[in-house]
Structures are given as structure tokens and as C-alpha cells.
Image (cartoon, rainbow, N blue to C red; front, side, top):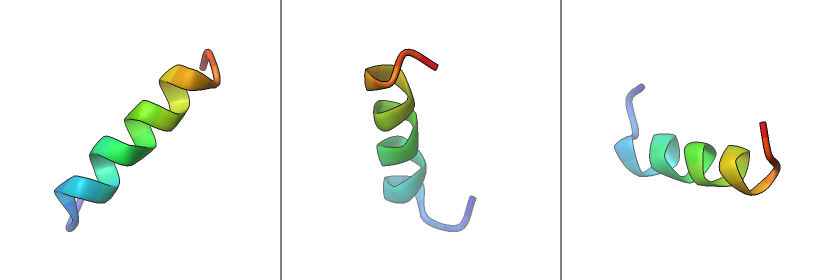
Length: 19
């Protein structure tokens, strides 16, 4: 992904959502 911070944030959100 072009933006590593956005990638990390997406992963964190997914973890919180249990996905």
C-alpha cells in the first residue's frame, strides 16, 4: 500500500472488529 500508516490503521481497525 502507498501509505504505511493507513495500512497499519486498517489492520488495527480490523483487529478491533474481530475480523
